[in-house]
Length: 164
Image 1 (spheres, rainbow, N blue to C red):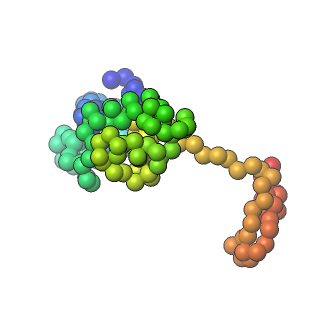
Image 2: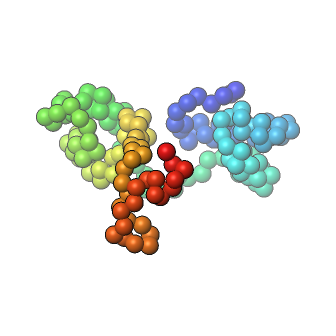
């Protein structure tokens, strides 16, 4: 594995990557070289090295996943992705825009599994169905209040003259 393919790895793939990295660390590769080769941070490579030195190969094997098991099986998650790709109209909604509330309703209608809309957003993100978007604030937008006087109205230039 020269480079890691882009995307989300399964737990088995992550374990395989750690075990391959362990072989390289045992061959004398530096942590930085391992980090570059496997597309991880140097901190992660360092953690793998500590686990390898402390517990051997067993320290890098996968463990039981923490948290509650998913209520949808992997094949159901594939169907969820198909529902998303088919669009909201195919799921019975009157517009072409998915919202997390609508998507949660579509999942409930299909599988009788109720999810909070916030969690549905995380499911959509994990499945690659939406990108997390952050809208930048315009430079000329007025910022209300300050830490010292909540009624003060400050412009961006007054907050930091170096910000253009």
